[in-house]
Image (cartoon, rainbow over all chains, first blue to last red; front, side):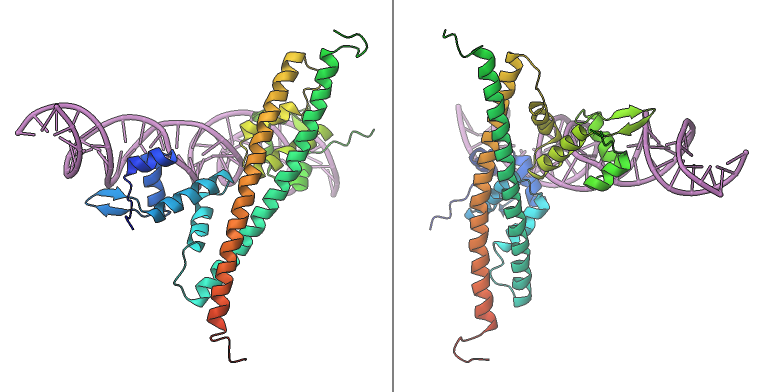
Length: 134
Length: 134
DNA sequence: CGTTTTCTTGACGTTAACGTCAACGTCACT
DNA sequence: AGTGACGTTGACGTTAACGTCAAGAAAACG
């Protein structure tokens, strides 16, 4: 139960971000570290949220998108209306992400094709006639 | 063999982009329409490139990334060194894209879990005790 | 206790990817 | 020849996601 708290520097080192980034995320209400005096201390919760933020970014989601997603991840004690709304939002996001993955799969196959093409082109150029060895 | 050329407006309507966007892509050397006087005319090639640009963007690739990818797609008559370089670049991109898709898959499963959680929470709230029907 | 780090809050700068606006040219009719 | 509709080139504006720098407080160290 040792609520292992991290300073801003420890966070930066752990997740490879700058202090500016963490404060920026805080200003955007994506994370909300506790304060000891004026210093920030990051709990397990903030670390989990930061991980989700960084992952979300790699998918091309905007911070605003991510903020909404994050809200889904901890609307534990809400009313039915809010919960329903969150549920809808999540379904939508999910759809987006699945579509994105499918498109990505197509693009991957395309690129693989293109690479194979180039490979054949290369081998035909580097081993001239295929008849003479060496 | 009717080299069906499109005006800027036809392009915009066909691909749902603005003229500004097309001129911007041109300035960034992603596309290079031919000129009839001062007017731009877009060939089959430009249309293909635009499609790739738009798809790339949906994956979160920057225009600069995309420019490099596009170059791979038409370095047909180059020397071996360039071809090899392009091949390496493509392999790298492919790796990135596959990693991205895998991560996306994980995130999708996560979100599906979260949604299921919320769904159960909802049904338990809206059909109170599960004993009394109606 | 003084010095060196680390952290804080502003405030302004930066890059990407366009949007918006001005001022002008030019087809396509009528 | 007039009038729209469409196209062109600048030039400046905008938003997101931070970077950078200044000035000060506070902790940590020797």
